Image 1: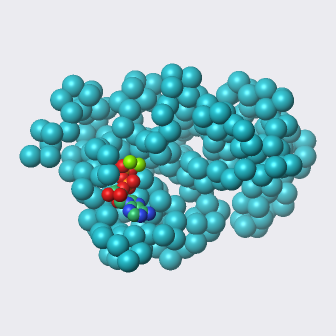
Image 2: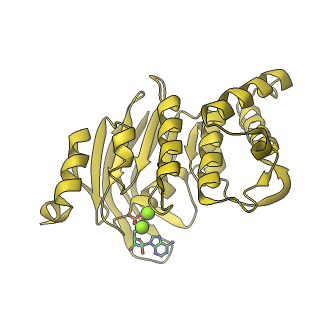
Length: 247
Ligand code: ADP
Ligand code: MG
Ligand code: MG
């Protein structure tokens, strides 16, 4: 599904941050990326989703067999790449439900599909909000306006379930996940994952991986993947930290 080959990237006019990343994600897999602060984890997720403050200087990002290096973020989204905090804006007067309905129909349109019939949409909203224990009054609130950390997280995971992307990239590094938010993310990811989709989960909270069992764990340090293992690597990192790998 996703192949990253020798990916180098920098900030416009800045130093190189990603220094040769190789990564392959197949359908049905969950990959976790861990690593010390400043390693380039968030940069990697931004570069995959196409944020324009970063520049790819070398290498390739191939999604479903197609090089997407030059694609705009919205084109990548329409092809099925979802990134958390893709829609972090506050939009007074636009409800959680109406926003996601519009986003979903826009994605359908970009893929040559008609709007989803209202009845089907309603059923989908009900199904996914039930999975995340989202109440009606939350769905009727203005998008992100006055949302708590947990509410933002819930909305984000709701957006993921509604859009049902092929590849979901979740960057959980900066969000100060409390136990409640951790469960929301874990339940959401676990109900999302299936044989046809994939998840790239970026975190420095080993605890999250107690709830979401990754197929692979990668350690990113100074812009490179320095170690790859299975779920047990996360436990080893919790016990030993990163220093033994950095030497
Ligand atoms: P991580 O998510 O692993 O903590 P980041 O990807 O956020 O790491 O950052 C990697 C390095 O790149 C850090 O040194 C950070 O300061 C720098 N960096 C990332 N994005 C920017 C940016 N937009 N402007 C300036 N420096 C940046
Ligand atoms: Mg950081
Ligand atoms: Mg980060």
